[in-house]
Image (tube, rainbow, N blue to C red; front, side, top):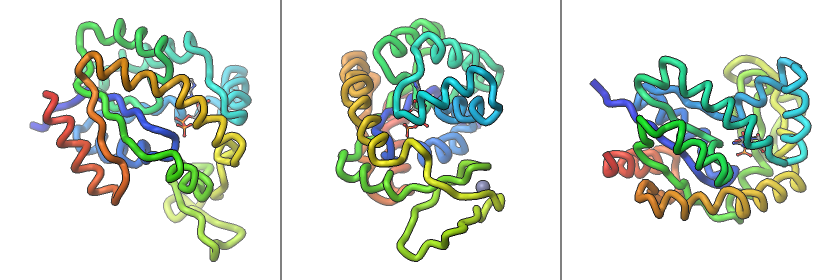
Length: 218
Ligand code: ADP
Ligand code: ZN
């Protein structure tokens, strides 16, 4: 039997967290829990909470800690995550969230925290060409020869640029990452759970580095 895992993936926007998380989720047979996906789903449903979250996301800001902690606490308590584990993507994003997560995971501690390291110049380039299917969330890369009406290969939905991938919002999100989220690297480093993994290169090569780092921490 493949052992499960309880993982946190840190890294700048555009570092490739989403791609690695999908692979890790299949590899360890655990749910990929993306707080960004949860918030975007709420926004699509159009609830009062979802619409408020959409406003914050489109501006490139952060949703409040209390709300995020409540969402994650509830999700980690569901049977799939509680038994086999999970891949946390996008949480924690602040030191307050990390402290709350320590309490939530007191009985079943995190296996490893992976910092997927990609320099800022490279992620800015990746984000400006990122396009996403509005319906299923599949990521694409825009090229010069891209058709104006671009349809998803997976589900036939419309492909568009995320509002928060426009240049102003990208810079705001990266600045927030440096001030709010980068301190978590030191936080987890002090606890001995951190592994810094070079995120530059082919996704399959990065994946080997990530799984090696996880196994080294069991
Ligand atoms: P990215 O990492 O590319 O910014 P995500 O999909 O992880 O994208 O998140 C999108 C947006 O959702 C964030 O910019 C932020 O507004 C909000 N968000 C997601 N996770 C959190 C969190 N843990 N705390 C606060 N806001 C969050
Ligand atoms: Zn699609």
